[in-house]
Structure formats: C-alpha cells, structure tokens
Image (cartoon, rainbow, N blue to C red):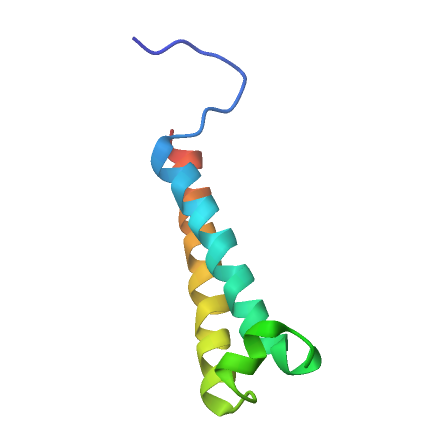
Length: 78
C-alpha cells in the first residue's frame, strides 16, 4: 500500500547506484591525480603514472557520473 508521504523515499537500487558512483568516482580521481602525490606508498608499486592511468581515471569518472544520474532517475521514479 502506497501512502502519500511528502518525504522522498529512495529505493535500494538508487542507494546502491549513488554509493557505487561515489566509490568509482573517487577511484577515478585518485588515478587522475596520483602523479601530483609522489610520496604515496602505492606509487612505489604502480610506478610513475602514464596515459593508461589517465584513461582509466577518466573512464571511472564518466562511469561514476552515469551511475549517479541513474540513481537520481531511480529515486525520482519511486
């Protein structure tokens, strides 16, 4: 039974989309900016950043934006 509650309700799918979008977006930002922080311990294992890191970071940011937009659409439907 649906009640006309003025508060917005988020579906579980929308919350998952928001969380995954945020996590993937942070990962993308890390790969885009990791060359600016040479003292990070992970840079010792990954080596210096190259074009692959930048492409992967850009794809992560684009995909994260798509997940967040999809989450907004899911929350608007419910």
